[in-house]
Length: 154
Image 1 (cartoon, helix red, strand yellow):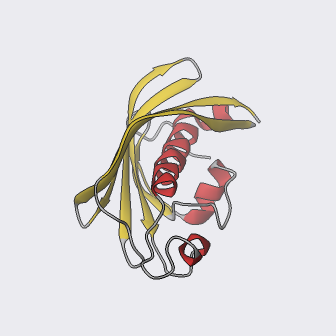
Image 2: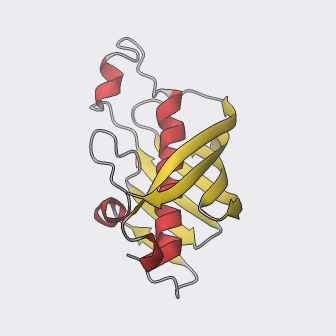
Image 3: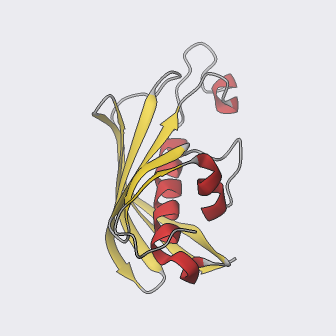
C-alpha cells in the first residue's frame, strides 16, 4: 500500500495495482499507473491487444474495444487512486462503482492502441467519490465520462 506522505506517486506496476484492487485477468483493464497525486488525479495505461477475449465477438471482422470496458478502465484507475490516497485507511475495503453520467465515445479503440486513462477527483463526501475521466489514444480523446464510486468494507 502506498504511503500517503508522498505527495506524488508514479510507476505503479500491475503487481502493485493488483495489491490495491481485486480485478484479475481478463477483467483487469489497467496495466500500470504512470502518475498519482493523492486525492487529486491519476493517469493509468492500458495496452490494447488483439488477444483480449472480448475481441472474439466485438467484432470479429473489425475488432473494437467495447465502450463499457473503456469506462471500466477509468473506474479501475480511479479505484487505484482512491486506495493509494487513503493508504492504511483503505485496508479491507473495496471501491464500488455507483453511477456513470455524461459518457461519450469519440473514436473506436482497436488492438495496438495504447489507452491513456486520465481521472480526476471532482468531489468527495465521506465514502463517496465523484470523478471525471478521459481515455486518450495518441493524445486524442476517445471517451469521456463522469462517474461515482463508494469505498466500503469488502
